Length: 268
Image 1 (cartoon, rainbow, N blue to C red):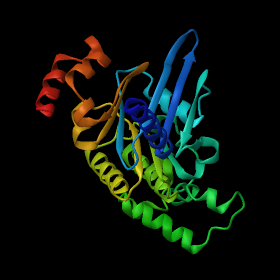
Image 2: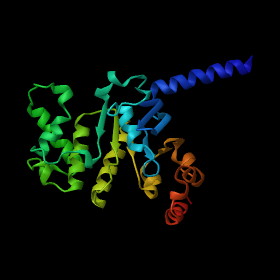
Image 3: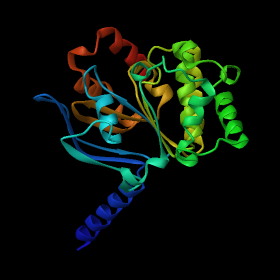
Image 4: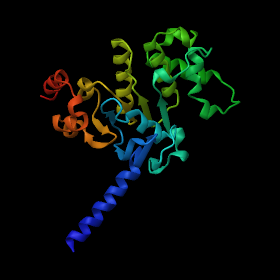
């Protein structure tokens, strides 16, 4: 009898944890042609955490994130945000895409890009008031771009563009922030600025999930990790999941000797 009660309590606890999860993915499968890019993946992100999605090139990291958001249509799978279908919770999500996927030739100013983050509140024909401009300016200050608000977005460096898109996400005042390789192709100063803002969000009780490729900074930047290579390999707190065995399971022979040596030093 005790065992039955414990099992029931455990199941109830699991359901409660899933309902509170900012991002819950179940059975996600995405295919490009005949070969699945992501196969039957489950993911449950811890609230108030910074989670890195890591894996080798072609492992399905960005695909998983886009499918969870509905940007890509999966063959199977569902996404819930705080226990509800994502279609009902989009106002609580901010998304920063890969910089390479954005048309930087579009003629718009930095401040206008940040104001776009407020459109869910403003509406399509909503009037931009001074309070909205003040908020945009504050978001630009947080990412160190306050002196560039009148600049055309296409005139900025790659790192500056990434900071502006983070400022747009901040303007949304979301509870869940999803970023697709936010540090790819940016300078060291921008990477430091971005991670500082993301940690501030985490400390404010927000949840951050980022596709990440630099294994040597995982323990410094993140507290949770999701390892994937088409299928889920492991997920959980960095101290438990970010191990040499799990990394070898995910990367196999693609985990270079130099990386392994660096990781041994990082992991102690």
